[in-house]
Image 1 (cartoon, rainbow, N blue to C red):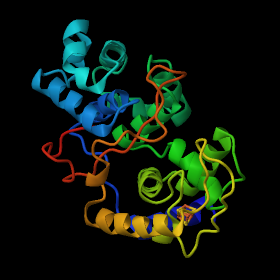
Image 2: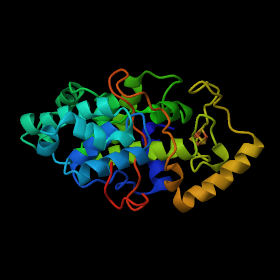
Image 3: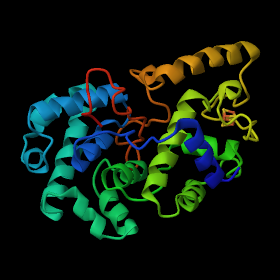
Length: 286
Ligand code: SF4
Protein backbone atom coordinates (compact mmCIF):
# COMPACT_ATOMS: atom_id res chain seq x y z
CA UNK A 1 0.00 0.00 0.00
CA UNK A 2 1.46 3.35 -1.02
CA UNK A 3 1.09 6.51 1.03
CA UNK A 4 -1.49 7.73 -1.50
CA UNK A 5 -3.47 4.48 -1.09
CA UNK A 6 -3.22 4.87 2.67
CA UNK A 7 -4.66 8.37 2.35
CA UNK A 8 -7.62 7.03 0.36
CA UNK A 9 -8.17 4.27 2.89
CA UNK A 10 -8.08 6.76 5.76
CA UNK A 11 -10.64 8.94 4.01
CA UNK A 12 -12.89 5.91 3.62
CA UNK A 13 -12.38 4.86 7.21
CA UNK A 14 -12.68 8.17 8.99
CA UNK A 15 -14.39 10.49 6.54
CA UNK A 16 -13.69 14.19 6.64
CA UNK A 17 -11.44 15.09 9.54
CA UNK A 18 -11.26 18.70 8.44
CA UNK A 19 -12.39 20.14 11.78
CA UNK A 20 -10.10 17.87 13.71
CA UNK A 21 -8.11 20.75 15.20
CA UNK A 22 -10.68 23.39 16.12
CA UNK A 23 -9.57 26.82 17.28
CA UNK A 24 -10.76 30.37 16.93
CA UNK A 25 -7.65 31.69 15.20
CA UNK A 26 -4.42 30.50 13.59
CA UNK A 27 -2.53 31.95 16.54
CA UNK A 28 -4.59 29.83 18.92
CA UNK A 29 -3.68 26.75 16.89
CA UNK A 30 -0.01 27.59 17.27
CA UNK A 31 -0.40 28.21 20.99
CA UNK A 32 -2.08 24.83 21.32
CA UNK A 33 0.69 23.15 19.33
CA UNK A 34 3.27 24.51 21.74
CA UNK A 35 1.26 23.70 24.84
CA UNK A 36 0.42 20.12 23.93
CA UNK A 37 4.02 19.01 23.80
CA UNK A 38 4.57 16.15 26.25
CA UNK A 39 1.08 16.39 27.77
CA UNK A 40 -2.45 15.35 26.88
CA UNK A 41 -4.87 17.46 24.91
CA UNK A 42 -7.07 17.80 27.95
CA UNK A 43 -4.20 19.49 29.79
CA UNK A 44 -3.33 21.67 26.82
CA UNK A 45 -6.97 22.68 26.40
CA UNK A 46 -7.14 23.75 30.04
CA UNK A 47 -4.10 25.94 29.53
CA UNK A 48 -5.50 27.45 26.33
CA UNK A 49 -8.73 28.24 28.13
CA UNK A 50 -6.83 29.88 30.98
CA UNK A 51 -4.96 32.07 28.52
CA UNK A 52 -8.24 33.01 26.85
CA UNK A 53 -9.80 33.98 30.18
CA UNK A 54 -6.83 36.29 30.83
CA UNK A 55 -7.04 37.81 27.36
CA UNK A 56 -3.70 36.31 26.37
CA UNK A 57 -4.70 34.55 23.17
CA UNK A 58 -3.85 37.61 21.09
CA UNK A 59 -0.26 38.02 19.89
CA UNK A 60 0.10 41.59 21.17
CA UNK A 61 -1.22 40.69 24.61
CA UNK A 62 0.87 37.54 24.98
CA UNK A 63 3.99 39.26 23.64
CA UNK A 64 3.74 41.91 26.33
CA UNK A 65 2.65 39.60 29.15
CA UNK A 66 4.75 38.97 32.23
CA UNK A 67 6.44 35.59 32.28
CA UNK A 68 5.02 34.70 35.68
CA UNK A 69 1.47 35.50 34.57
CA UNK A 70 1.74 33.26 31.53
CA UNK A 71 3.42 30.47 33.49
CA UNK A 72 0.71 30.62 36.11
CA UNK A 73 -2.04 30.43 33.50
CA UNK A 74 -0.60 27.45 31.67
CA UNK A 75 0.31 25.43 34.74
CA UNK A 76 -2.13 22.63 33.69
CA UNK A 77 0.03 21.97 30.63
CA UNK A 78 3.10 21.23 32.83
CA UNK A 79 6.59 22.49 32.05
CA UNK A 80 4.89 25.84 32.50
CA UNK A 81 8.03 27.90 33.04
CA UNK A 82 9.60 26.62 29.87
CA UNK A 83 6.42 26.76 27.83
CA UNK A 84 5.70 30.30 29.02
CA UNK A 85 9.03 31.35 27.57
CA UNK A 86 8.23 29.58 24.30
CA UNK A 87 4.79 31.16 24.08
CA UNK A 88 5.96 34.69 24.78
CA UNK A 89 8.76 34.36 22.24
CA UNK A 90 6.34 32.97 19.66
CA UNK A 91 3.96 35.86 20.29
CA UNK A 92 6.80 38.37 19.97
CA UNK A 93 7.80 36.77 16.67
CA UNK A 94 4.20 37.02 15.45
CA UNK A 95 3.85 40.58 16.63
CA UNK A 96 7.18 41.97 15.51
CA UNK A 97 8.10 39.92 12.44
CA UNK A 98 4.61 39.26 11.08
CA UNK A 99 2.83 42.45 12.12
CA UNK A 100 0.61 40.49 14.49
CA UNK A 101 -0.81 38.20 11.81
CA UNK A 102 0.55 34.66 11.83
CA UNK A 103 -1.07 34.03 8.47
CA UNK A 104 1.31 36.43 6.82
CA UNK A 105 3.89 33.65 7.07
CA UNK A 106 2.09 32.21 4.05
CA UNK A 107 3.74 34.75 1.78
CA UNK A 108 6.98 32.83 2.18
CA UNK A 109 7.75 29.50 0.47
CA UNK A 110 7.13 26.40 2.59
CA UNK A 111 10.81 25.77 3.28
CA UNK A 112 11.26 29.34 4.49
CA UNK A 113 8.16 29.13 6.66
CA UNK A 114 9.57 26.03 8.27
CA UNK A 115 12.98 27.62 8.80
CA UNK A 116 11.46 30.65 10.48
CA UNK A 117 9.38 28.49 12.79
CA UNK A 118 12.27 26.16 13.60
CA UNK A 119 14.35 29.15 14.65
CA UNK A 120 11.97 29.73 17.55
CA UNK A 121 12.52 28.06 20.92
CA UNK A 122 10.31 25.05 21.55
CA UNK A 123 9.40 24.57 17.90
CA UNK A 124 10.61 21.32 16.38
CA UNK A 125 9.82 19.86 12.99
CA UNK A 126 6.61 18.22 14.08
CA UNK A 127 5.32 21.34 15.80
CA UNK A 128 6.34 23.50 12.86
CA UNK A 129 4.57 21.21 10.40
CA UNK A 130 1.43 21.13 12.53
CA UNK A 131 1.36 24.93 12.68
CA UNK A 132 1.82 25.09 8.92
CA UNK A 133 -0.95 22.57 8.26
CA UNK A 134 -3.55 23.58 10.84
CA UNK A 135 -2.86 27.26 11.45
CA UNK A 136 -1.71 28.32 8.00
CA UNK A 137 -3.57 25.83 5.81
CA UNK A 138 -0.40 24.72 4.05
CA UNK A 139 0.24 21.36 2.42
CA UNK A 140 3.04 20.20 4.73
CA UNK A 141 3.68 16.68 5.98
CA UNK A 142 3.41 16.20 9.74
CA UNK A 143 5.77 13.33 10.44
CA UNK A 144 5.01 12.11 13.93
CA UNK A 145 5.50 8.89 15.86
CA UNK A 146 2.26 7.49 14.48
CA UNK A 147 3.40 8.04 10.90
CA UNK A 148 6.76 6.45 11.61
CA UNK A 149 5.00 3.38 12.97
CA UNK A 150 2.20 3.04 10.44
CA UNK A 151 3.85 3.82 7.12
CA UNK A 152 6.19 0.79 7.26
CA UNK A 153 3.42 -1.49 8.50
CA UNK A 154 1.16 -0.71 5.55
CA UNK A 155 4.05 -1.11 3.12
CA UNK A 156 4.48 2.55 2.19
CA UNK A 157 8.06 2.51 3.48
CA UNK A 158 10.79 0.03 4.36
CA UNK A 159 11.09 -0.89 8.04
CA UNK A 160 12.62 1.72 10.30
CA UNK A 161 12.66 4.47 7.67
CA UNK A 162 14.52 7.71 8.17
CA UNK A 163 12.28 10.61 8.98
CA UNK A 164 13.11 12.23 5.65
CA UNK A 165 11.76 9.19 3.78
CA UNK A 166 8.50 9.35 5.70
CA UNK A 167 8.24 13.04 4.93
CA UNK A 168 8.89 12.44 1.24
CA UNK A 169 6.30 9.64 1.04
CA UNK A 170 3.70 11.77 2.78
CA UNK A 171 4.50 14.79 0.64
CA UNK A 172 3.98 12.67 -2.46
CA UNK A 173 0.53 11.64 -1.27
CA UNK A 174 -0.33 15.20 -0.23
CA UNK A 175 0.74 16.54 -3.64
CA UNK A 176 0.41 20.16 -2.62
CA UNK A 177 -3.20 19.81 -1.42
CA UNK A 178 -3.77 21.26 2.06
CA UNK A 179 -6.91 19.18 2.69
CA UNK A 180 -4.89 16.04 2.01
CA UNK A 181 -2.23 17.15 4.48
CA UNK A 182 -4.87 17.55 7.18
CA UNK A 183 -6.58 14.26 6.41
CA UNK A 184 -3.34 12.30 6.18
CA UNK A 185 -2.07 13.52 9.53
CA UNK A 186 -5.39 13.36 11.35
CA UNK A 187 -6.22 9.97 9.84
CA UNK A 188 -2.84 8.51 10.75
CA UNK A 189 -3.25 9.70 14.33
CA UNK A 190 -6.75 8.24 14.53
CA UNK A 191 -5.55 4.95 13.08
CA UNK A 192 -2.53 4.82 15.34
CA UNK A 193 -4.48 5.67 18.43
CA UNK A 194 -7.42 3.36 17.86
CA UNK A 195 -6.04 0.41 15.93
CA UNK A 196 -2.44 0.50 14.74
CA UNK A 197 -1.02 0.76 18.22
CA UNK A 198 2.41 -0.47 19.25
CA UNK A 199 0.57 -3.76 19.81
CA UNK A 200 -1.60 -3.62 16.67
CA UNK A 201 -5.30 -4.42 16.84
CA UNK A 202 -5.60 -5.62 13.24
CA UNK A 203 -8.86 -7.51 13.77
CA UNK A 204 -10.71 -4.30 14.48
CA UNK A 205 -8.83 -2.12 12.01
CA UNK A 206 -10.78 -0.60 9.10
CA UNK A 207 -7.73 -1.17 6.89
CA UNK A 208 -7.54 -4.86 7.73
CA UNK A 209 -8.67 -6.03 4.28
CA UNK A 210 -6.09 -3.97 2.39
CA UNK A 211 -3.12 -3.77 4.74
CA UNK A 212 -0.20 -6.17 4.20
CA UNK A 213 0.51 -5.96 7.96
CA UNK A 214 4.25 -5.85 7.62
CA UNK A 215 4.88 -6.52 11.27
CA UNK A 216 7.73 -8.18 13.03
CA UNK A 217 9.79 -5.12 13.87
CA UNK A 218 9.72 -3.99 17.47
CA UNK A 219 8.05 -0.62 17.77
CA UNK A 220 8.53 1.62 20.77
CA UNK A 221 10.28 -1.26 22.51
CA UNK A 222 7.25 -3.52 22.23
CA UNK A 223 6.12 -6.30 19.96
CA UNK A 224 4.24 -5.19 16.90
CA UNK A 225 2.66 -8.55 16.26
CA UNK A 226 -1.13 -8.63 16.18
CA UNK A 227 -2.73 -9.01 19.54
CA UNK A 228 -3.85 -12.38 20.87
CA UNK A 229 -7.41 -13.68 20.37
CA UNK A 230 -8.32 -12.22 23.73
CA UNK A 231 -6.74 -8.99 22.69
CA UNK A 232 -8.65 -9.04 19.42
CA UNK A 233 -11.92 -9.53 21.25
CA UNK A 234 -11.07 -6.61 23.48
CA UNK A 235 -10.09 -4.66 20.42
CA UNK A 236 -13.45 -5.34 18.83
CA UNK A 237 -15.24 -4.05 21.90
CA UNK A 238 -12.98 -1.03 22.00
CA UNK A 239 -13.50 -0.31 18.34
CA UNK A 240 -17.25 -0.52 18.84
CA UNK A 241 -17.03 1.95 21.66
CA UNK A 242 -14.69 4.09 19.67
CA UNK A 243 -17.04 4.35 16.72
CA UNK A 244 -19.66 5.78 19.03
CA UNK A 245 -17.37 8.44 20.38
CA UNK A 246 -13.81 7.54 19.65
CA UNK A 247 -12.19 10.79 20.49
CA UNK A 248 -13.77 10.93 23.87
CA UNK A 249 -11.87 7.76 24.68
CA UNK A 250 -8.61 9.60 24.32
CA UNK A 251 -9.47 12.36 26.71
CA UNK A 252 -7.05 12.26 29.55
CA UNK A 253 -4.80 9.58 28.09
CA UNK A 254 -1.12 10.37 27.76
CA UNK A 255 -0.30 10.86 24.17
CA UNK A 256 1.79 8.28 22.39
CA UNK A 257 5.02 9.30 20.86
CA UNK A 258 5.41 12.36 23.02
CA UNK A 259 8.76 13.64 24.08
CA UNK A 260 9.59 15.76 27.05
CA UNK A 261 9.18 19.36 26.12
CA UNK A 262 12.39 21.02 25.13
CA UNK A 263 14.12 17.74 24.38
CA UNK A 264 15.77 18.06 21.03
CA UNK A 265 14.16 20.37 18.55
CA UNK A 266 10.72 20.68 20.01
CA UNK A 267 8.29 18.16 21.32
CA UNK A 268 5.77 15.94 19.65
CA UNK A 269 2.14 16.47 18.99
CA UNK A 270 -0.73 14.31 19.92
CA UNK A 271 -4.31 14.28 18.92
CA UNK A 272 -6.50 17.31 19.06
CA UNK A 273 -10.16 16.71 19.63
CA UNK A 274 -12.62 17.02 16.86
CA UNK A 275 -15.03 19.89 17.11
CA UNK A 276 -17.97 19.07 19.33
CA UNK A 277 -16.23 16.09 20.89
CA UNK A 278 -14.39 17.93 23.61
CA UNK A 279 -16.33 17.93 26.83
CA UNK A 280 -16.86 21.33 28.31
CA UNK A 281 -14.81 23.20 25.77
CA UNK A 282 -17.09 23.74 22.82
CA UNK A 283 -15.02 24.86 19.91
CA UNK A 284 -12.23 26.57 21.72
CA UNK A 285 -8.97 24.77 22.19
CA UNK A 286 -5.84 23.55 20.54
S1 SF4 B 1 -3.65 -2.28 12.79
FE1 SF4 B 1 -2.94 -3.99 11.48
S2 SF4 B 1 -4.31 -3.87 9.67
FE2 SF4 B 1 -4.44 -1.89 10.71
S3 SF4 B 1 -2.93 -0.57 9.70
FE3 SF4 B 1 -1.94 -1.49 11.52
S4 SF4 B 1 -0.90 -3.33 10.74
FE4 SF4 B 1 -2.42 -2.70 9.19
